[in-house]
Image (cartoon, rainbow over all chains, first blue to last red; front, side, top):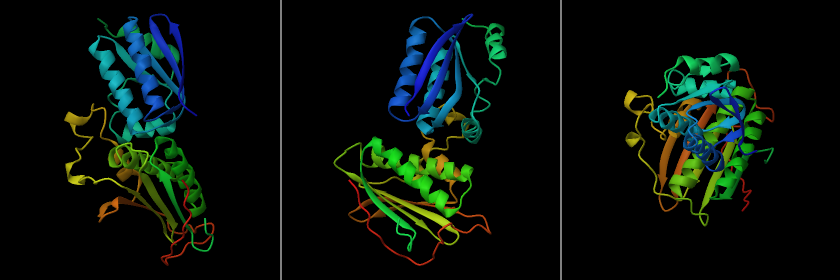
Length: 119
Length: 161
């Protein structure tokens, strides 16, 4: 199953419900283009809901890092929501768990964007 | 799989679409060997990352080349060998992805994940044949392979295109 993404707007936050595989090739390319597209529309508060992500590889992790740094450079924030155990473990092993702002409650995740200063 | 020998060998076209084929074989072999679900996933990920390295870095995404895989269930472990037709790489030259200066790098975590998930990881140049990685995952004491592993070395040939 390749990656699928549904985009919805909640207040000032763009929530992306991601499902399937974020792996080298189609999945990573889709995610990269999706984030680039949102930034070009001026949507700089992005919340990636990874609840239905079945598989992520080292390239997928790299894509999350790339999204995080790209959005931050534009003065925005990219945060993660609802990590599966597999994704959680991978982010811990790679020491990225402390880099990302990670949430398990959508309402709290949304309100955390309002507290954070954005350019 | 040859049930007597606990060995699966396969040669795949060097194409990213075959990464999932290798994953499926690894899951079946890990399950047959008796690994729990979490370790099955770790083995699957190690094979996934090795296949990506073989296809992308070793064979330079050239689909006229191939990747050879060999899975063997032994009494106390699963041994996986993956060979590409590339020039190989030196493990000493791979930066530590956990170093502060590398933490936000976009790439460079594949080998690290393989080492994290498997008990042994070796890279070898095979003269005239390419680069071969060997990965070993040991079974916890007391767990026996479902179909009975062996410590004898065997060969089987089950080649698909």
